[in-house]
Image (cartoon, rainbow, N blue to C red; front, top):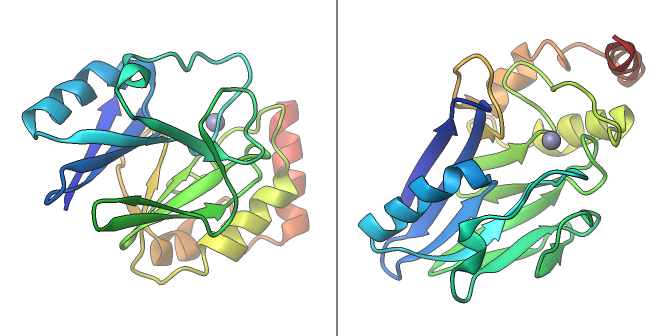
Length: 207
Ligand SMILES: [Zn+2]
């Protein structure tokens, strides 16, 4: 296996490159246009072929054009309700994406946007913006706080304790957490009822 986290300090955004060494097939999760040149250089250096570009979610009005989209044979995938950017595949919960002998499983984790999905690969989960390390991010127009609470507490915090959690952003320089740590210590969710969480998010949206 090959795994690399790529940071863009200007936007505090994180993207991920996963690959099966034997076949040379690779998957990129949440690459922004600003990650593209470095990603292309790594693909060339490591002799990898990018087979899938997977988005945890998309936002209306954002720029998703990228030199990566011109790679031959590339398949772009995102959640079934993620409709504001073009894609080749729209996933539902339980779908899988294969690359070489590896596979990524799709978990529907709506809330930050209706079409948010997370990607589970081996012992690690790429959760996009449905949660952050010790946080849950600022709500946007499409955010449904109740769905967000259900996704995090019902689909992410129920994964095995040692599952590594990789978010799409971190503004404080942290790069990874675990399900056990977030379940116990994430102050946005831990010890909060669904109702209290929803009230808290609505108040933050008004700030
Ligand atoms: Zn987002």
